[in-house]
Length: 421
View (cartoon, rainbow, N blue to C red):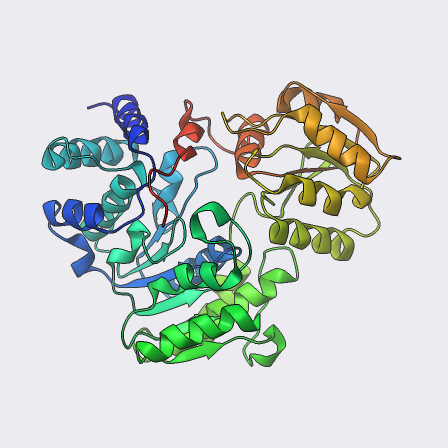
């Protein structure tokens, strides 16, 4: 099987949608020899910040000399981003081999793309003899395919409104799904502080006899090395990562200097990622795809770039709360270019423009046919923010030459639920 054939096989799995439950993943993992039994995990869930927290944990433990697996989603450009060992993307040859082996073992059983990718990752990490795997949930936690593992620690970054159609329409319901990764006796680390969500997490931890560590404010945690990632919110994510490392010190010893080295060298593309091109133009890339993410972007712009007035390129998915996001971002700019996202679920650029216009009538606004046209329109602008969706950020990374091109692999991020939680 070639790599292109493997990618096409993964595309065909999209017909099975997103099935919320663990039965299929347990079955496929058993066919693969239950590789999860040979690995150690830190399982990370949450509405926002879980990817950054995973990147910090990976960087810290890699700096300490461990062989570290990293499983995240969605990918920005290439499917291979989802499965990394010591921040090296899984080779194309291993993607081809694993797809061929697992598809043969699965013998035509209906398995979703995410379930299949989850077991691919487990098998690869076991083959690579990873000493630790940083393991990010996909959607929710309780019935997410990643929840077939028993980790060394369960991390819940925070709880906010996102994916309400699947996770529930209250913070309590969403918290119950995220906190579903808590396992008996396994320590829990969380930065959530909203009473209604925190109560759910604490109750589940108590029920499972799991000790819980709460990060109320980053300043309350003694060890505070700086992180290379932009934004005040990253201090909280760093505090969560540091607390997790501290909780696990008896099982995996990490010297303080390695913690500092790891945090100083974190790399997490597409999340408040600042670049400067050869012409001196600054471009900030951030996948602020929900209200909490937009509030974080707004705070970062006001704090870190208060002297600049950026031009926005904005595109998002129709099923996201984009009217609220547009209202949050509209006061921060004088000019906006709205664009469609390369997805069947894209919000219409004209509708986005109308929303920005209603929020700030003084704005100069244009809806354009695609990102390429918007980048051309921004050629002479000193500071540009590209945001609204990780789909758009991935497309920007590719067009700006910051990521190797992948033949249509961003479409593998598309999914539809076939059963509610």
